[in-house]
Each structure stands twice: as C-alpha cells, then as structure tokens.
Picture 1: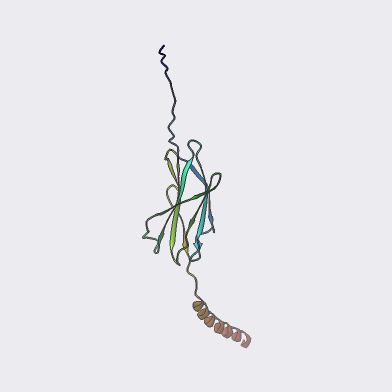
Picture 2: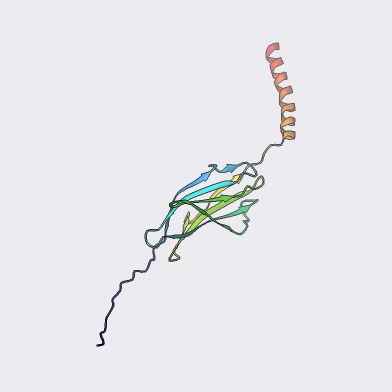
Length: 152
C-alpha cells in the first residue's frame, strides 16, 4: 500500500536586524589621557534568530581629517545580552572614532551609530619641564604684584 503525504511548511525569512542598546564608554567623556584604554559595553539582542556576533571597530587620526582604516575587534559576550570590547590607548593628540556592529544568525547587520561615529581624543599632557618653567614665571610675577599692593 503506497500512501502519499503532502507536507506544508511555513518558513519566515528573518530580515530584521538585531538591536544594540545601552552603549557605555568607560572612562566616559571625549578627552582621554595618553595611553588610556577605553572599555565599550553594549546590549545586543535579536528575538528571531539570535545574535551571532558583535564587533567593535575603531580608527584613528592625528589631524582629525586623515583617518586610518577601521580596526575590527570582536566583543566578548559577558552575560545574557551584554558584550564588552576594549579600544587600546593611543599617544597624545590622537583622535579616535568607534562604532559597534552586530549580526544576527541570519546575517542581518546593525551598526551603532547608524550614520556617525562616537569619538574622543587623547589630550596632551604637560610635561614636568613645562610645568617647572610656568611656575618659575608665575611665582616672580605674583611676588611683584604682592609687593606693589603693599607699597600702595
């Protein structure tokens, strides 16, 4: 006895990208001391096929006009939907831009921010020599001003 079965299956194609939320930069701010690494943490979720991977990308510039190529670094999954990545420290005066991209298991990408990049720069440190010279100039000036006030 030969029986024929027809199987009907509904397949939905996942065309929705994952979402990235709760971006935190530590330390916060747009000015970092030279050599300071920066930790980036995000929440990435996808309700359909799940998050496949999250990547932190950064690039640098010394003049805020000519930029290096993007360096991609996979972010580590820490707990549930939390991902963590680190941007290494750079020398004084370096401008840094970064973005985060997540892919779901259907290879749909999303990038945060969508159109621009987050950015910060490393601030120049005053060397002890410069500070010493400034103090040598300021102290005599203060002494002269103090002497003039007492003379009047």
